[in-house]
Amino acid sequence: MSTTGERFERAVSIMERLRAPGGCPWDREQTFDSIKPYTLEETYEVLEAIDNRDWDELPGELGDLLLQILFYSEMAKEQGTFSIDDVLDRLSDKLVTRHPHVFGDVKADTSAEVKRNWEALKTEERKKRKGENADEAEGAAGAPAKSILAGISSAMPSLLEAHKISSRVAQVGFDWPNMEGLFDKLAEETAELRQHLQEFPAPGPKPEGRGVAGSGRQTIPEDLRMRLEDEVGDLFFVLVNIARYLALDPESALRKTNRKFRRRFQWMEQRLGNNAGTLESASMDELESLWQQAKRQEKRP
Image: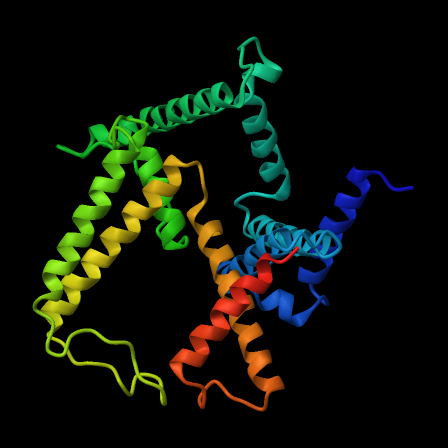
């Protein structure tokens, strides 16, 4: 029986063969940029399998995600920048360095202590990296210090980015003192949004009507639209911080709500279809009644 190492080496060698002369034309044409969308797609498929508790599907999805790492590493080896060995070495070194309570003499008996140690080690690593770049900074008069937010990618989903930003600044004490402070901020941002809505053209905001998407969209001044967008963004940011305070992942929370809504709405569609009805022909009262039924039937044992 093959060992884990032998299995991993086989996967690496298959990736090498696909990229080698005479390999797969599609794989040979790929670049770092062309593979990026697949990496994001495979990541979400892993998350979906976990959320669905689909343990039969998850190994395949994790394999697809691992393929992305092998792909990037093989392309990097071809251009002489790094290889899968460097990836594994960095991973192993980081795991050992950031777990001194396991591989060293640091004491951490609870997960909270482990997290504090982890964040402290990351802070030290950032300081070390800043120190390594000090010589370059000295050559630039008045060069700004590296931001504490450096390293947080703006390409990630916005809820996750907001969570990481607020977590990072909280490490230096820039945070709300308690949950009540967050609820006060939520009320403040809601009030500001309501204030801007007073400028909304009559008869006021309303959802797009039935029919072609966008056909019922109201025209509002661009300046007002931008201010409303800012205020809605502020509301999202406060909600992300509420999730962080509760140790919840906002991306996961919203994803679960999306699935819940999808599940209930599709139940409504099925019920209407069984009675030869359609969404378009149903009244709002009928749809609301079906929605309440969908919610009730989910709660049944």
